[in-house]
Image (cartoon, rainbow, N blue to C red; front, top):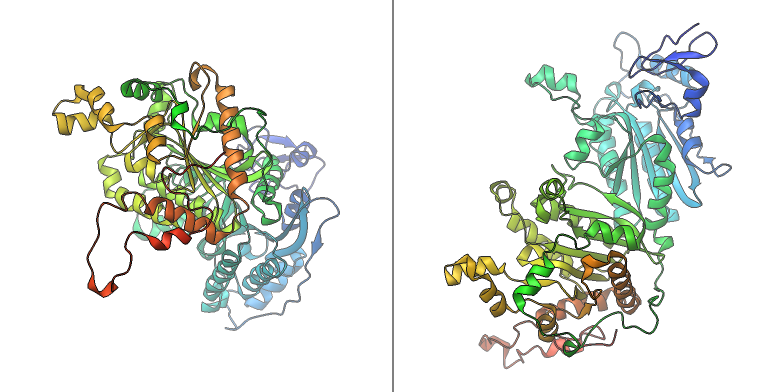
Length: 597
């Protein structure tokens, strides 16, 4: 039996059919290893792939059209270390059969058109030189010109030192190229493979809308050896791996190699502007109103009882609703800064065939899940993650659905250090100007500013047993009654239930729950929510961006509009009662003015 001599790459150099896994060092059968896309069945180690292997694996058969490149022997510094740079280039070309460390192509993934730039680590460690930077930039320009999503597959040790500061300039050039795709509303995807470091990590690899990584893939600006040698820090186990990075909010998801193609297909189908429909099917429940818009149709009830029902642990969570009514959902993680808040769930999916962004707070039910999800109270990282996904929705033109069930934003010391108030304020400002339809639904508790940070919407709905308040009844009682036990009195005074909030115009419609409450029949509750969302989106989707934004701002501008008038002589007698609001268009129905669902 002969085994591979190149263990790290899991490749055979001689002999018939066996090699050594670069992860667990198990002896594996080469043909089986190849059929498994070069992933070890024993430990899950993902062996490196060439750029052409990547294209073959990801793109539809017969759809690959390589973008041929003419490359010169670029040696601006006439660089020589132990050997001339030009000699190293020629050797890399002879060894790999490539012109440079990246291969670009047009193709399709499950029928979705895409431009791909796939890097190859075999070519001088996938280093970023002028030719590589030019190839990435031109691929982005083709995607811009054809309005086609761009997929970047990265594998690199960083900037190419032999080209000096010219290689550094490629970071700027490629970054601005992705910025132009942002401005044009074209989806960008990044697939991080092992390793991706230095100038590539600090430019185009991490600027994509959605960042996917293979298991164990390493990503970072400075390599572990550099960190250890320069600042003498002891690094934690798994540092800079995909698993480490998803916990710290840097990447969106980890996908095994066998799932990459299907994941990319779903993301391209939902996230490509080509797939967005401007119509929504009518609600399935024919003959039954999807929304209650008349408060007199709702029963009077004790406010404290509403609070207790809203907090019931058996009620459907955001993830329950997503599982029941959103197809092809892909959860996206991280604020791209430092953390991924488990109390905030964000992602892309389809509602009745219409691509949507879904954002919601997540509580859980068991003690372990409640603790792990921080009892549904988002940290600043949670609100910043939500803001990132809302910006993505605005970029590619997808409607936003928010599902709210939270006692409020997390009030701890760390949250204050990280700017909880700023994160909430920035979300409110962002949502005020989103150029896409926004529908918010309070499904359980709508607690204070932490709930409002997801509820600045064109239409605000709530489930019939939900509550929405400026503060928890217990908190209000502790402050004003000096007794937290006076919560029932505070709840009655605050008028927190669906009937009162619909009457006041704070919410636009109420989603009916099953007779026993949403906790008694998740499926029926989800179907009612689905019908309410589809009917509301059917109303909003045909509207243009200006009408959507103006209507949303008008809706919230009118709360308290007649409580005060500032006397300003410079206004020369102008009407301060909001006369300009009357011309806001068909979406300007104010509080108390209900439209038929």
